[in-house]
Image 1 (cartoon, rainbow, N blue to C red):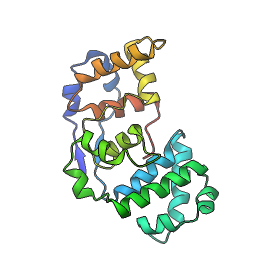
Image 2 (image 1 turned 120 degrees about the vertical axis):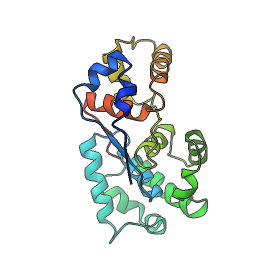
Image 3 (image 1 turned 30 degrees about the vertical axis):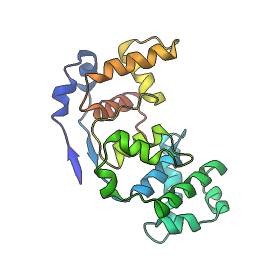
Length: 206
């Protein structure tokens, strides 16, 4: 189920610097996906990897199973098998942690869909290996949330430094400036992130 929001361009274009970036790009849409545990695994697979490499490892991961893998199947997959498709030892453990959490605590789409963004983060953050960035990617690309701002994402930081001529030497000040600028993009901050990633040509492969 896709959420088409070409009208978000009108709102984001009120920011004149962002408007210049948007003028050369096509609009985005966000998609809601039901198998939350699987896409959380994909987010882990893509951490600190280029889009191309992340896509390759995701395809290898899916080939391990006859269809869409269940949490039980993922947890039963040997650590060595996950390592063989290109996962680090830590990532193999984190994927197992996600599957175990889905089995024991629950990761039902309908339950998460009723939570706001911060409630989803608070619910999933206890999973070892799942940080705030990973959950923010899940919010955008799996739950289809329109108002997520990934302030700690390197690509977003680089794009905003370039577009807004921000000082990158003071990390605390940079973060404050990014949050201040992005506040006016609400309730469409996810779309702003997508355009900033496209500006840097590194939309996450999740």
